[in-house]
Image (cartoon, rainbow, N blue to C red; front, side, top):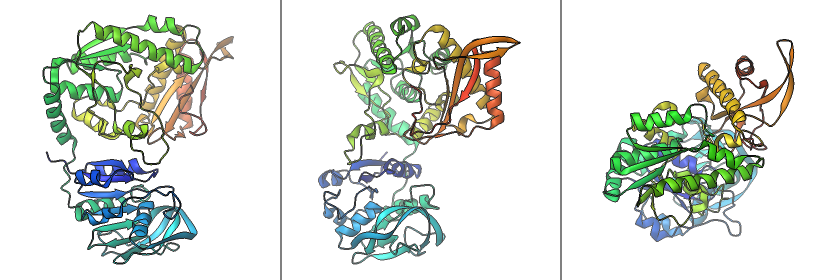
Length: 512
């Protein structure tokens, strides 16, 4: 398959990943590059089109992100969004000024119907604006194709040179028909065919893996999470029994989770799976430890030791599979876009840097939603693919304070009841992440005319697109009542349930 490529040049905009996801939703493969990428490297990639992202700077400011204006002479269609539109204008001789009136949020807008981007789109419409500067004069050869009450140049185009610019954000769902505008750019300006599908990805990736891993021994640390599960299944399709998965059950998983993982991958997908039941070992190491970061380090270190010991039994291993996905690459600062680094990417279990395996990352080009689609195509059960995110240290950081078997068993039961109710009420898929937590707190209660002194269970549910920010889920009162009643009545050692209504920020999603 000849993979078509669109490049997204990142100027530090908050929506850069969202632009990429929208493009891929339209069956076009794209990659995000820093604005610092040399022009020769951009040319060498032979893209069908280029999109400039937004960004927080002013194009006329000192040290503002910019690029070689020769990019406009490459005969490659370019779409500038927000800062990208202003930069295109600035470099091509137009004028960008501080706006008399800033525009943020939903805005009424008028589109010219004969403009390429707005073909088939209602002229009186709504878009999402987020700008302090505005284009006050279009460059020579450009036609103004859109405006708002406070923004005289909301979009412009030079069809002869295949250059297009919009002051608003078509990638944001609040911009009505925004996806149609991106489609018009991709299919009408860039003339793509749209061959980026999961079927094609599987076919291409399996062929590559077969060639790279032929007759080699391959190892995967399988956590049971979405990314490692999909990566392992894809590699298994390519190399079969040459893949061995090690599943370290640290005893900090949700109720029956270890058995479910073993059943899916051993009995249904027919992988070579080694399950290491190391619950006692982890609990011994965690005994008396209360500080959350100390718990994380102990769990991570112990995982490495167990994984190393098991892998050494297998003899020489050539390759190690990791479930690295595209946001991990971007967020580790690899894009060098001038945006703040959001988090550092850590390899599976924090494996030591001196490992002798060569790393294989079959999902490194995919976003999370694409990984899920791929998992379904590969036959992984939907329940696993759409399971809520779960931290690597597991219940070790959802039991607040010191961890022991009694507390873990209480939390497992409470969490399982919580999930059961959400699924019964058809709410599970509406929520990005939900879980129960067990603070190191006991409270007084009354049960059957007797005084009790038992644990409090906290329950949390949030909505989010990526986990970087989140809002607490507005759970219906009758559902909260049902969850509370069932936990208190069915879980021995609990007499109180509380619901966390803190968003992120200021709180984090997890309690530890």
